[in-house]
Image 1 (cartoon, rainbow, N blue to C red):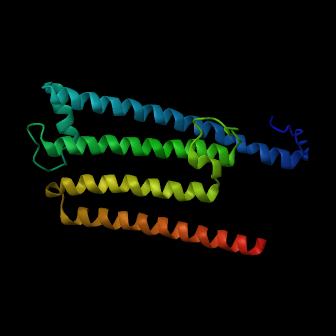
Image 2: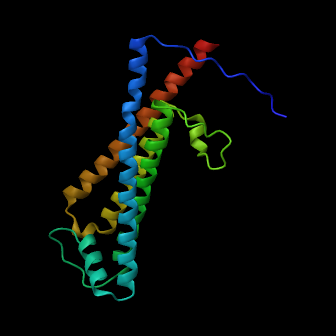
Image 3: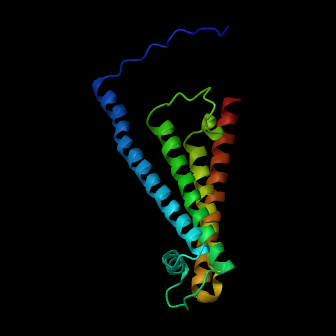
Length: 202
């Protein structure tokens, strides 16, 4: 039988600190707005998937929408569904999924870190990363998610490289490398902070 612990009495805050601390709930509408943005991404995913399946089955309207979506401005427009076109559309769907994962991390992790506890301990669907989430962990995970999204965009560009000029390819590669360096800098800074904190405890 699990040992029962008495509830920890809550400390009563003075009016001004209480007001400042309660201001964290102003972030709640922001997270609710991100949930609505998640709904938009889900709708967009199914529209793109429906068009891809329709184009594969010979639907002219779906094919037109797919070709319009993958055609680079100023480049020659493809006339049929090819392996490259399918790959670009699928990468677009993966991009939507990764952005959706990023939204979930911001919504759940941000709410848990900056607003209020959700008390998910023991829940079978509790995200593994949420059990040890804090501002530093959330920051690093967001940086890694952004790198993943940037990688998908860069891969889409390279697959369709013939339709881009060298300057665009170079700039996208440099931007992706900047994301990588930023993530490494964040991880290294957090490691220094954690090492310093642990050394002070000892």
